[in-house]
Amino acid sequence: MKVKKLCKIAAFVLAAIVIAGCFTGCKESDDIARSKYRITAQIDTSDMTALALCEIDYVNNTDVELDEVWFHLYPAAYRNGARYTPVTAAEIDSAYPSGVSYGGIEIRGVTGGEYEIGGLDEDVLIVKLPKAIMPTQRVTITVDYKLTIPNMRHRFGYENGTINLGNWFPVECAYDGGFDASPYYSNGDPFNLPVCDYDVSIIAPTEYTVAMPAPAERKEDGDKTTTTCKLDKARDFAAVLGKFDTVSQNTAGVSVTYYYTSDDKAEEHLKAACDALSYFSSSFGAYPYKSYSVVQTAFNQGGMEYTGLVYVSDAARDKMITEIIVHETAHQWWYGIVGNDQVKNAWLDEALAEFSTTLFYRNHPDYGVKYTDRIADAMGGFSLYCELSKCSDTSMDRSLADFSTPSEYTYMTYVKGQLMYDSVLNFIGEKNLVAGLRNYATKCAFSTARPDDLVACLEQTSKRELKPLMSGYIDGTAKLYSFN
Image 1 (spheres, rainbow, N blue to C red):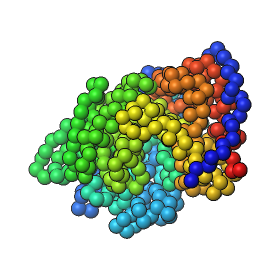
Image 2 (cartoon, rainbow, N blue to C red):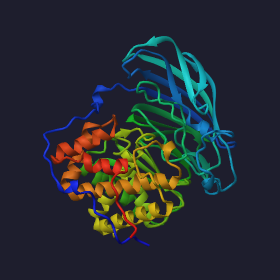
Image 3 (cartoon, rainbow, N blue to C red):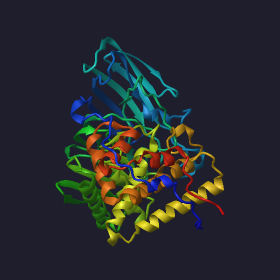
């Protein structure tokens, strides 16, 4: 069912005001020193545990003296008794097809300072330094820990022959007047991650292939194999273990590999990844890494983005696989290259990834998906959702904690965000919009962008005032539907 009668967008979109320039608060990537992680983990598949050592060369990127450093312990959300759980009650059956299973993280020791466990859900490692560090100074902290991997289809978990290692090590908390210790909300992607350098080794039974985000070296030693990978300037480091088949192709100097367990159209899906990577590189700026890994794995949602590696759910079929691949590839720019606080500004990357997918289809008619159909479906779905749910708050820019349901989160970030960009495109044209997004990707590369940075970059490129138009969508004051 589609709502046929739609109200007009506010009249201010008809007015074009030429502006002279903009201010963007993004720091250039070369201005920011990066922490360095060296992680070695040994996976025991007999009981699905891992012993790991994480050495962190931490740099103080704040403008204040620090006498302690905080790290997220995201696996704590998977333990029995967690206050903030990975999935909602409605998702339990699909997330735990083999029955509810618990995981977690046990800190066995820390060198480099005294430590305690804090946070809203006992999910933050607080290391108190023996000597305070000034801005730009470094300190080495080593964390000895044990993981228990839950039997579930999620970022961190195992099922159906694959083992997902997403958000699986102590991750430094972002700092903005204080450490960001946001818990692991089940809505959205509850992350606000700085860019770091990674050197990771995973020891696992030789029968498993370890999919990693960058070129990896494998060393066999009997029934164990160590897979080692280095990845610089990354928001995270994820890996997936499985008994995969693979297909690979080089596109624009990037080695693209599709790891799959069951897919009779693997070559088609590899082509989608290559086409998307090529299109987004030409539109928004070159993909900055040597490799890109697309991994079919047990995952309860459609897909999940990490730097250089994305999940595609093994439950997805046919055209849905292609759409997931294109969307998650767009996230290599909107989340990976240009970061944002996904807790406070979830729409900032999700709306862009969703609309970038629609732009991909618009420029690749051979995929058989029409731009106009996607926008019409978004408008119809959004209007119907608002009518049935009788939602009084249609704002996009709110914390994950303030969305009452996963559906509300989805419609207010992905769906409404796509409608916002369609309105911007109709106002300034596709060429100006794409050029503005390229400007945004360039100026905010490897930083944490804010909504004003995006608007300013689009205004600077198009020489149009866009803030009134975009603010109407973001704060919920623009009415996009009627029910007459």
